[in-house]
Image 1: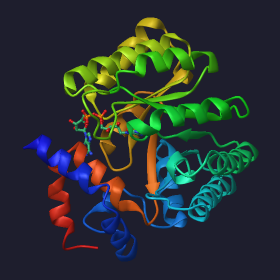
Image 2 (image 1 turned 90 degrees about the vertical axis):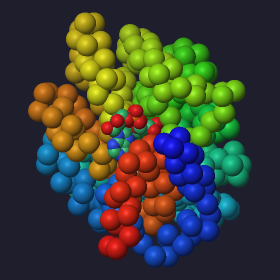
Image 3 (image 1 turned 120 degrees about the vertical axis):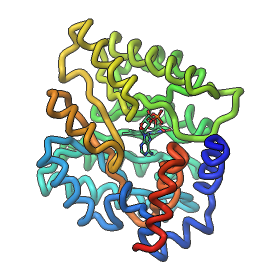
Length: 305
Ligand code: FDA
């Protein structure tokens, strides 16, 4: 049943009609639990509040289904606005973005132009940028863009997904760039040809790559809500005497809020991924797919804006 619901939500997350309708009608169905708001001002207030609680942030302007160069350019403009807002308000926040929304599927020129505009602004405002990892067909193109841009801009990182078989090799190949990597389990529906299907295997591979990247001496963001992985990371860094500024935990906005604060209390660095914008639908469906039990929030949210 759980797997069926997971697949259903992942299928729904790709629905263009629903995405367009959601844009028009605004945050609904309890999505505000996971999305900071539709405007940059709303996101800014949420970030300031999280910062006051000792939590660092990475902000993400939500965007799905970019169809032409102009839309990709507008998405990049929104990222630039977000970077300026972070600088202006002196917030403790980085930026996360998806390369498809910068035109990855359109052309190399479009994606590179948009990324260079963003990274110039990020450099001027001392804001670190992370390239989120999308579905399997975008994995190699994302890593290619990352490698090219990392040679020009230092303040750039990306994401590696533990469910992919190729992951260990990717981390080894990326080592020469001394990358700041966010390690995650992986959120998309992938075939058995490219990804582990069993949660147990994904968790084992997750631990393996955390160890690999931490011991390579590169900055590691362990992005998970899973207590077992968090405990594993704590033991690993303790055992190897890894300094507190070489790693951090990351969690999504609205998920395990108490755990986030508990880790801060214990002295760990915690960064919260804060999405905002009118394109909340696909992101919201992916969160429901991770934990179908959250459907209960949707049912409650049906009657509230
Ligand atoms: P898992 O799903 O096993 O959950 C462990 C426990 O956490 C659950 O038992 C539950 O208690 C709690 N939990 C998990 N999800 C929950 C939810 N939705 N609601 C309430 N509780 C929940 N993926 C990707 O493919 N590309 C990317 O770029 C990113 N980026 C990213 C950034 C950050 C900061 C995070 C935290 C995650 C991502 N992800 C991602 C998503 C990631 O791949 C993964 O799908 C989710 O983090 C869920 O996996 P967990 O590691 O939390 O474990």
